[in-house]
Length: 539
Image 1 (cartoon, rainbow, N blue to C red):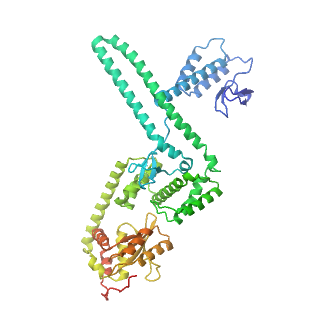
Image 2: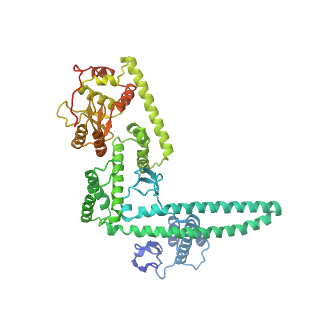
């Protein structure tokens, strides 16, 4: 048996045993009622049972269900099964029109744009919001969706979404105001003129206000439809920009992430890239099947940088394989409070992908609670160790008299108390790496300088070389002295952290209050035999 779809005109073939049932067009998904063969009478018990089975199994909408009951219950003696099926399809079609009316005039079809991780291209501030401009500086932001940056849909949402949200708020306000006016008029009429007068006013004003609301929401819906159509057009550009659907994400990992590392773009940050490097990358992307528009190349690179940073952050948390209720606690253990302003949006994105989306305020309260528990636990453990082995505190003056190698071991002990895993290097041949730190998958190389004079830029150069040699993410130079001006300038240009005498004293004070192996610490603090500072000629 062959039928023609009434919507798209496609010719469809059905088996003989499909008579009296319904099918669906594979092209346009239109529901098609398959009639009975000529001469078939539906009055037999077998046909009636099949009709009732269909009625129970095909319950799609409330209106169709009611219509089906009414039709079957009042079926005239000469009605055919085809008539019943036709009336049921009409009832379902009417209900579909009602659903469309509600979407247009009552609820609207707003674009689905959930909050996600974003970074400002001007001030590099991170936030977990819907596509909006930066809250701090009103600068343009980028998300973690690569195709959104390539097609421009993210930029369009960033521009139009605030206007759509204003329309939503105005629509809600209009509904509240009209409802309040209706209630006031009805109550006043009831008190002054009685029930019937109030009922008349309620009907008249209700119809009037409903028409006003429909007219306003119709205008708002047209603006939303124009935005949805533009988004649909931009989505159609994906085929022209990428030869394969998933090539954008794979290319970002295989080419753009190493490109960012090649140009020393730091984690959780951004730095300018030379134009020559960008031109080479653009040509390489074209050869791989990604035609990045020149005006969007900068946004595309910043989107890839944000996605690289988030994947790095997420991999660190997945490494511990914690249950959902322990993720926030693990973050509080790994990252200090000073990094919350930059990393909490990453945590919100990670939790949102796990099925939870806590607000920032609630999340900060949980982090503060967990860190308070950690401090209390460390405080209690330190008191217990002091009771068992006796207390021992160190000072910066004692550090000045230490052996240089013991100073390296002391730094490892200090950073170990902060939650780092320590990998000590040999006394000679360490290539500028005195201590290697690792926490949450992030490696840091530490260069220790126990000097009696300012440290020159040669120590910074050694730290930069060791960072690349050992594959570390960060480099740090620690000294009990100060740094020269050239060393500070070189460290800033290479993103090397410098810890001078003042900051080292603060670390020692924190270390004195944390639990530690007091016996090992006493062995490290033995003064060196030669109390003369090594002499060095500054360049």
